[in-house]
Image (tube, rainbow, N blue to C red; front, side, top):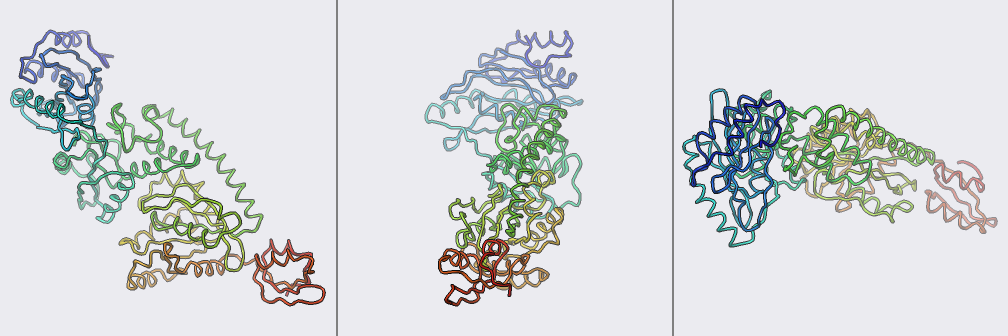
Length: 597
């Protein structure tokens, strides 16, 4: 009986495949030529993969038909100390004989004796690639041979290879490595490729190589061109990489073509950023925002998701909406997007109510914005620690780590300014070059804290080699949010590890800003930063004269805590105090007001 997707397949073809169960493969041969020719001809005719499972006695135990990119695998009993005793031979009607990431994953997870991929086209068989399990340093991996001719593949000493692997399996405990090993590919700038490496590190991906191609415009089929794609496939095999990360957005067709040529999972920069966001999101709001961005991004790329949609796939690019949502049609995705937007709107309204309360209280609002990993969370933690407003000291610190996108969830705490005003301080998600538009859209509700702030502190990593590009990238996002004209302080952070020469150059290039040199880690110039913030925030301070009876000492103490005292004299009726007060203090102490000075 033929397994898999047999819908629409004519009976005489199914009968031809059914006859394969009577075929016997000679011991010591991977296959015979009759088998390969038959499944290749039928596969090309129906444009679907054909999969044949053979045991060590040479008996065919299962034949199945898949779609153009995948087939059903037999259910095997996998033992820890030996291989399954089954080899899989299957066709690739795409014309590429390389083993795909799905082939390799099946080889290792099912501990197959071997997996063979036969590339077929209108010219016939293009080649045969063979993969075997391989053990290095106690880790179960794979080794690939080919593309080979049919004759060479047929006579490959696979039994000797299987015996060596099983000998190693019996000797020691072997484990499967789920580590993702990547090669980075880019055509923009080498600096952009370096940042892609940092993004990969933030996702716990080990980068083993980079490929930079100076190209004015990407190739519509392979992004880097067919020749370069084949070179990339060779490098990937030599380096043992199981993931290719491209520095630009790829179309669904490009992803599909690259995966076919390289036999490796392919993702782009946007997918990687979305993955980081999916891993870091903690609150319901940020999780919805990430899921929304992922669904929007993937809805137009269903054709090219390839190995990311495989039932035995995993790792980067698979978190978030989940496999079910990736495989549903666009109509279902649109419905999911609609539902998420409605839920996000409820959260946005709730955030708006909280913001209105802060506005009614007259509390000035400061937003920390800047490039990812510039030190916003570290600055926020230090300011709240050194100048805590009411109850802020009881709140825990925001996660601050030397990683890109360490903070996703917006947090607002209060700080006391040098003029004794209480201000709200909001830490926001970091920006990055080529920040996906869908992500900016999805995080609009979070970024509203920047939109409705009275002052933006643009935190800059002055020690970065690409500091100027980072500043411009943030400016572009702020412009997109419509807040580029809002009062802004450029806080040059990490000055403790930045040369004076670089700082002078930055101050000269961005002299249109009010600039403060700070070090959040060492608490350098933080008071100066708040003093300048006071100057740039809307003025709601009044100078008032109060006469406070000695029986109301609590009011006097309140004034000293929340106002700037110019003078204090003790008279017979009580304490005469001249103080600079904000609207809140003015209202609370109005009973004892003598006059406004």
